[in-house]
Length: 179
Image 1 (cartoon, rainbow, N blue to C red):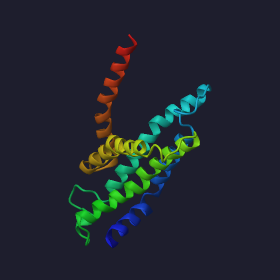
Image 2 (image 1 turned 90 degrees about the horizontal axis):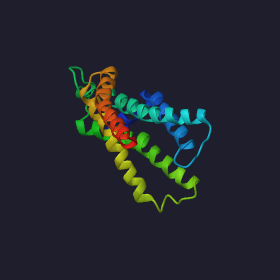
Image 3 (image 1 turned 120 degrees about the horizontal axis):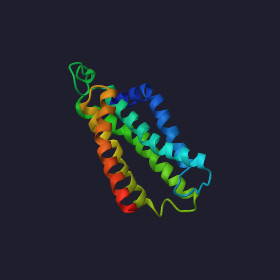
Image 4 (image 1 turned 60 degrees about the horizontal axis):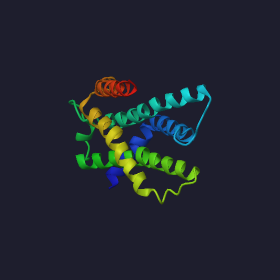
């Protein structure tokens, strides 16, 4: 457990700018949650649309940077030369994701519910289900992509190649519904 905490602390020390970007974007999105706030100002609606793009991107940036801290591919894996096992490394990365991605998202969703007069305790199963969906849709694909790419540019290219066909299909489906 001591090695897991050591890796976790190192990751926090190295990735604090990415953590700050993700948490700031998450806080802005929670303050302007379009589900509960109705805005008539077009500039604010544009800002919310920008947050819809920035939130997943900042999440992917944090996850990819975390995985690339100890690059899993190539010839110079730092973690192979230290007394860390792959299970220590995996546990440290999972702890980081829980502490700086899943927990803040969970707390923001609970805070938005509480702010709008709903009891988060009454909706705990819904909040946990959203966490599973969030992890399956954003966190795990980013981690998988980062584990098979060598750098941030390649991971971004892989993400674009992964999501563009999905976005095009969603766009086509919404166009068909309008007609």
